[in-house]
Length: 264
Image 1 (cartoon, rainbow, N blue to C red):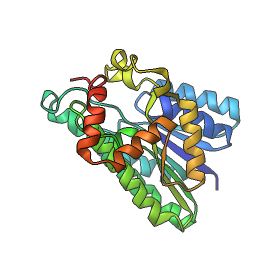
Image 2 (cartoon, helix red, strand yellow):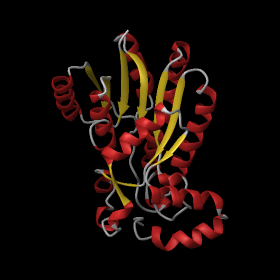
Image 3 (spheres, rainbow, N blue to C red):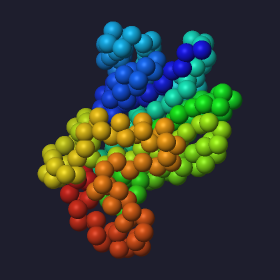
């Protein structure tokens, strides 16, 4: 049976780069995102360029019914999902009280609940087949000290890191590799969407990475069965300091800097 890689948030940025790099490696693909026209165009391009099978599924993962519907679609289409890339996500700028509950609820559903639920649907079959690869795209923010503004983002990403690590420990001897991929600042649409592009553009170039490198490192990490991959030397130093030092020290060290790119 053909193996497929399912990629959420596949229409742009890191998700789109995963699609290209996995296609180059011969993976058949199921691309998932909200923007159907972009998905359709990308699917046709990848089919033509790499002679693989590419399907797409148009979904808004803020809809709580979509993970189960997506799983049913794969079953009915006889798609063997052997690799899962949970990449869909976005930031909500502003302080907690400045956004309504639906905004926060949708954010939690896309970036936390759907990640766990999609894993829960597809992970058992990987265990049964004794083969599977799961990359949950987290963030350096999962290690960094708390900040004011973008209230839920760091907490969500911290959860994704720990959840992925636990799943890694459960599946590592059963043929299923699970990795939390933790990029820092990456050249994508992310900051344009959440309205912080002007703020983050003031950061020095050495803080930024290209999505091509982030994705390449992520694929290597999951093949090595590495539970957590923090992209970039500077980011690994930041993550190590944040983990090793007391919270009050890391807040003192980083608070002034993080406030410069957190929209309040």
